[in-house]
Length: 112
Length: 114
Image 1 (cartoon, rainbow over the protein chains, first blue to last red):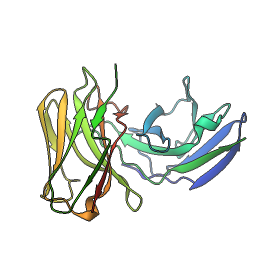
Image 2: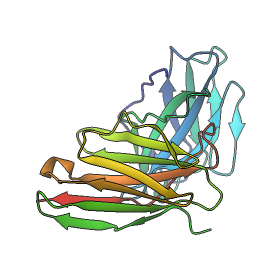
Image 3: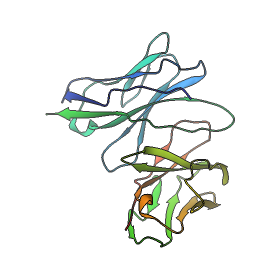
């Protein structure tokens, strides 16, 4: 699976949009972009995923560039409870199985 | 549904003792994953199962570690004998199928080996 690069940390003001970037310049055509987050002392939580179209759900929006070499996770109105480590993962669907490989992630601190 | 349930939440043991961590999958899920998290190495996939069958155990650190799925809803991860370097948070996750990337994680079992 392709590797990803994320900034180690970011700050965001409460109520503002949090834009978390991810670089995946070696992504293959059959690889999806997944985002998870891990709040302190909890297990990782799935947020959203996409292939090439932008995606939105109740938690966040995912914007994938046209060349698919990077993406941005957007939390439209960050709250203090969104403080967490956010992981960007690229993963292919294949018959051999499904291994989500977590990197270092971005530690997002939402401040009052 | 209660989600993925792990026990114990915390375990403190002495080097050389056997440790058994338990995981109950979400009802109807067919795939089960064991991860380990440490400050130094982050989240590492240890082993995963599909329909009770181990698919890939290449992440299991050594023979002291073993995992089983005695039935479709339950799994155990055993460490025998335990060592201080096994201290970590162990997460279990399940998914509906092996192909989906949407995993549901438990709250984790924090293991401390003295």
